[in-house]
Image 1 (cartoon, rainbow, N blue to C red):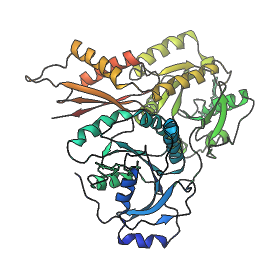
Image 2: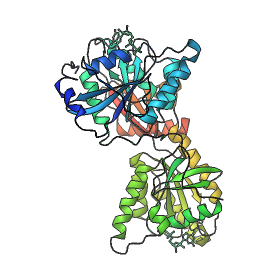
Image 3: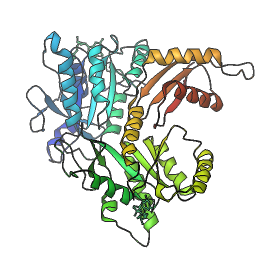
Image 4: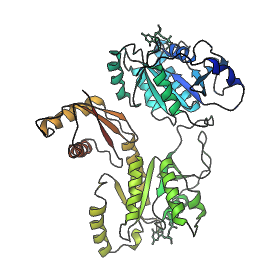
Amino acid sequence: VATELAELGGDDAAEVTEDNAPVPVVAVVGRPNVGKSTLVNRILGRRAAVVQDVPGVTRDRVAYDATWNGRRFTLMDTGGWEPDASGLQAAVAAQAEHAMNHADVVLFVVDSTVGATATDEAAVRLLRKANVPVILVANKVDDERGEIDALGLWNLGLGEPQPVSSLHGRGSGDLLDVVLDALPDAPRERYGAYGGPRRVALIGQPNVGKSSLLNKLAKQTRSVVDDVAGTTVDPVDSIVEVGGQLWQFVDTAGLRKRVKNASGAEYYASLRTASAIEAAEVCVVLIDASQPINEQDQRVISQVVDAGRALVLAMNKWDLMDEDRRVLLDREIDRELVRIPWAQRVNISAKTGRALEKLAPAMETALASWDERIPTAKLNAWLSDIVSAHPHPVRGGKQPRILFATQASSRPPRFIIFTTGFLEPQYLRFLERRLREEFGFTGSPIRISVKERQ
Ligand code: GDP
Ligand code: GDP
C-alpha cells in the first residue's frame, strides 16, 4: 500500500543535534536524472540540515540528518556532479563503490520508466559484492501502471524493487520502512570492507581434525598474515595462503589456541559452528572418513545448506582408510549424502598433508557457483523447453501456467518462477534437478521460489 510522507523531517529533526552518538549512514546512488535529489528532498521535507562531520563526505557528497519513526540516520546524497558522457559509467561505479564502503545502507535508484541501462548494470555488478544492505529503488512509479515496469527490475539481482514516486510521494513511506529494517543497530566502522580475501569456515564435529587442518595449511605457506591492507581482519580470524591465494579463515581463535573446554564443550562447539557459518562465504565441512557418517555430520551439513553457504566436503583422516572401510564409506555416501549430490568431495589427510592441494580449487569452484548469475533470456529459453517437454500435471482439471523465471539474487543463486497457480513440490524438485543439469552450480545450494500471479 502506498503511503504519503508528511511528517518526516518534522519536529523530531530539531532534537537530533542533542547527542553525538554515531548514526547510520544511508547513501543514495544512481545515474543522473533518475531522481536522486527529488528522493532526498522527499525524505527530508523542507527542514533539511547539512551535516559536516561525516567521514567520507566531501563537498560533492552532501549529508543530511533525517529521522523516520523516531530513528535517526544520515542521508548522503551522492549526486550533484556532471561527468562527461564517456566517463558516466565509471563515475557511477565509483560512486557506488564509495557508498558501499562508507554507508550502512545503500539506496540504488533506477528510473523505472527507462529500465536498467548499461550504466546501471555496471554499478550493480559492484553493489552485489557489498557487505551492507542494498535497497533497489524503482523511481518514477507515479501510478499503478508503473508497478509493472518496476517488476522488470527484479533481474538486476538486488532483490525486490521498491516502487516509489519521489515526485508525488507514492510508496515513499513503505520505502522508509524497508530502510529502517535494514539499518544496523550500530553504524559500521568506516573503512573499506570490500575486496579482501574470501571467507572460509572449517567446520565439523569435535575431533574431525579442524585444528590439524588449519595448522597444516598454515605451515605449508610461507607466511600467515594477520593484517592485510584494506581489509578488516577480525581478531578471531586467520589469513592463510592456500593454493596461491589468501583466504580468511573465520572464527579460528578457538582452533588456533586449541581450547578444549571439558564441560560444555559440545555446547560451545555448536555455537561456534553457527557463528562460523554465518561469517563465511564457503564452508569446508570435515568428516572423519575412518568413522561411519553420523547424525552430527548430517546436522552440520544441514546448517550450511540452510544458511545458504557454498559447501565443500573434506573426507579427512584418509591415511587411516583401508579397502573395507572404503567400500563401506561409498555406501554411506550414497545413503547419507543423497540430498547434496552437488557438493564436491576431497579425500584428505590433515596429518600427512595428502591431497590438500585439491582443497583450494574445490573452494573456488563452489564460490564461483555461489556467485553465478544466469541471464534472464538464457534461463527462460531453458524453462520454456523444459515446460513444453514436461508440463506440470493437471489436477482437478487445472494446470498452472509457468510464465517466466528470473534469478533474483546470487550467493546463493535464488530463482523466482512466476506462475498462474500452485506448483507441486515434486515438480519443483524436478525443475531444480534439471536446472542443475543445465547450469551446474557445483558446490552451491540454490533456492527456487514461486510467485503466483492472478
Ligand atoms: P538526480 O539528479 O539524478 O538526482 O535526479 P533529479 O532528482 O534531479 O530528477 C531528475 C528529473 O526527474 C527531474 O525532472 C524530476 O522532476 C524528475 N523526477 C524525479 N522523481 C520523479 C518521479 O518520481 N516521477 C516523475 N514522473 N519524475 C520524477
Ligand atoms: P578438531 O577438534 O576438529 O579441531 O580436531 P583436531 O585437529 O584436534 O584432531 C583431533 C584428533 O584427530 C587429533 O588427535 C589429531 O591428531 C587427529 N587427526 C586430525 N587429522 C587427522 C588425519 O588426517 N589423520 C589422522 N590419522 N589423524 C588425524
